[in-house]
Each structure stands twice: as C-alpha cells, then as structure tokens.
Image 1 (cartoon, helix red, strand yellow):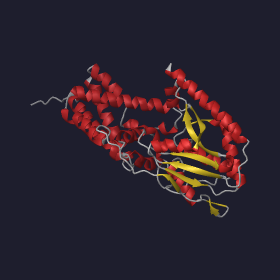
Image 2: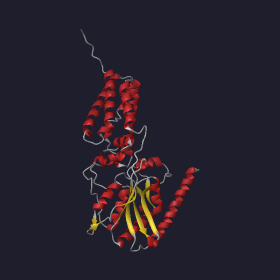
Image 3: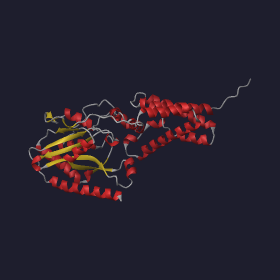
Image 4: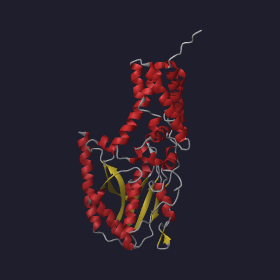
Length: 379
C-alpha cells in the first residue's frame, strides 16, 4: 500500500513538472533575467558526500524562479537494486521552485553558493529552452556514471551545448588522480572511505581531467572567460553553516583496527577461517561487479589480489583436510599480497588497506606453517 502511494506521488510530481515546463517553454525572458550555477555543499549522508550542482533561472518580471536538478530516480523502479548496481537505472532531470530548493538545503544545513553566468540574453533564453525541452524529451532520462555522467557533468554539458563550444573544462587539480581527489570527501566517514577504496578499480587511478564534482565546477567557473570577460559574475554565498563533523562510535578506524587486531592476536583456527571467508566473499563480489556492472569505476579491480577469490579453494581444502593444497594456496596468496603491496605502494589508499594486508599475511602465514609438510630428521 505504501509503495502504491509513493508511486502515485511520483507520477503526480512528474505530471505537475510537465505542465510547468509546458508553461516554461512559452516564456520569453526579460532583459533582467539571470541564469546561475548553484553549488551545494556536502552532507553527512552517503548520497550527499560530494555535494550537488543545479541551474537556477530567475526572471522577476515573469514571476519565474526555478531550479533544474539532474540526478533524480524512482525507488519504485522494478528490480531497483539490480538496476542500480548494474548501472542501467534511469536517472532524470527535475525542477523545483527556488524557495523549495533553498528550504531543503537550509533544513539539511548544507552550504549553497550561486554563480550567475555572464552571457547575453539570447543565450540565457537558449539555455532556458534547452532545460525546459530536456524535461519533456528523451533527454530527460540518462544512465548515471560516477565520473562521466552525473549531476555536475550534465550541467557542464547543457551549458556547453548552449554556448556551442566546449568552453567549460577543468581548470584545477588536473595533476591528481580521481581517487586522490575523492579521498578528502570521506573524512569522518571511515567505512565509506574503506569501501570505495577497495571496490573501485583502475579508472579512478587515472588523472582527474574531467569535471565530475560540484566544487570542481565551482572553481573552474571562476577561471573561465567568455567573450573576453569572466563567465561567472562572482561566487555569491546563499547559505553557509559551520561544518559539523559526524560522531559515530562504530564508523571509525578504531573499530576497524580492533577487529583486525582481534583476528591477528587471538590465534584461533575458527576465527582465521571465518575471517578468510569474509575476505573471499568480498573478492567474489568484486569479480561479479567487474563483469556485471556497467559502472567502469568497478572494473579491473586489482584489489582482488588482496581479497582473493582463490581463498575459496583454500577453504574447500580445509574442509577436506588436504594439508598439501592448503599450504600451496596459502603460499600463493602470500606471494600475491606482496605483489599487491608493491603495486599500490604509491597510491593514496595504501594506508587504509595496510591493516588488511598485515592481517591477511599473519593469518596465511599461520595456516601455511601449520600445514607445511614436516621433513623427518634421521639421526
């Protein structure tokens, strides 16, 4: 019943949005109209860790003040979880009254900044038309990609389309990898930082040459010029809050180190095999995501050398009590972990995975020693 009600609300909102955009398409902007890029600060929820980008169109003479947002999706979509994981879930553009938009961010205590675009009236009209048309066409739907197709990159695309030039490009931090750029966003969110460190593959180790985060677009707009003038008229603060670091008794490095220290120091066979089972399941998940998902960030994940699926065979030989193959597979995994360490020694996520590397080595060395065939000594 609850799902059916949510679907009715969702359909009603889409209908109202369509009616409103039909009206918007007929609006001729006045000479005092403005279009702005809205940059919203980060929040403490996973979906808000990177902030948000939107476009505001304001024209007081037409009683118009609307914000266009990319990145909405329908929780009621059939097979939602699998579509989200695979990367073929439909995302879409929505619009809201500016007052509702600001009230939402004020409620969430998230900063909001505005950069009015310094472009001619005809281009403001063109941008407004492009946004309104995208609400009513196939352009409304798109498949989300973490780096290549998100709320920020979509805003960049529609502005560049309007200006008929690839004018908005990244102007800062192009000498850092995507992984390095992302890392500070997870401060005070330890397990989110750990999770993304181990689930992301080689794509995020590429140099971060594309604008994919709101703060990056905000910085770039301050440096870009159009027709020999700054593209942005300045960076206006709409909402500003003191940053409040979240406090959690479990989401921190102390619980992580405590668990790994327990596994390392307790020296119990059952604990070792439970730990390796968890590591194996994570490795199998990474393999599944690499083949199943369209998200390129999840492909070619070298972290499987640490979360090695071959441990499944080791656990099988533990059950069948085959000491010879237990020793061989434990030794093989030790070699792979050493190779993995050498590979990531220059990468930013080395520190956060180092405790897992150490724990895996301790456990595997213990297992290898216990199952090594002893050579009899003849006196």
